[in-house]
Image 1 (tube, rainbow, N blue to C red):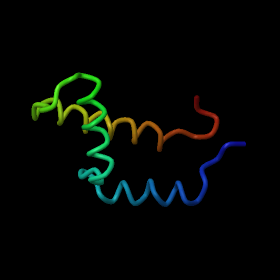
Image 2 (cartoon, helix red, strand yellow):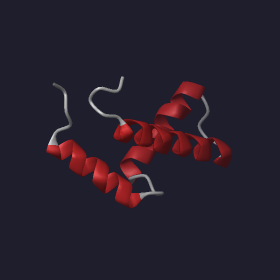
Image 3 (cartoon, one colour):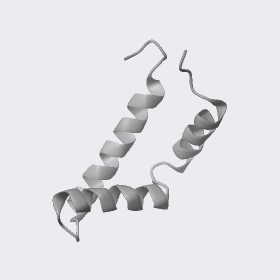
Image 4 (cartoon, helix red, strand yellow):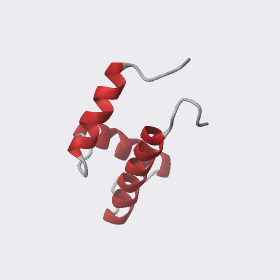
Length: 70
């Protein structure tokens, strides 16, 4: 059936409590991956903001889904 494990639910709840901050290791990974994809070492504040905004949008999308939602 594919429901969330209690550990995953706990991690998502903890993540929500830290909002609007993103855990530093996740933020670093997001910035490093995007920097590598773009081939740009120093990302502008606007790009950093948009990346973090999209991160939270995706978190919201995945936490509001039910098992029957694609």
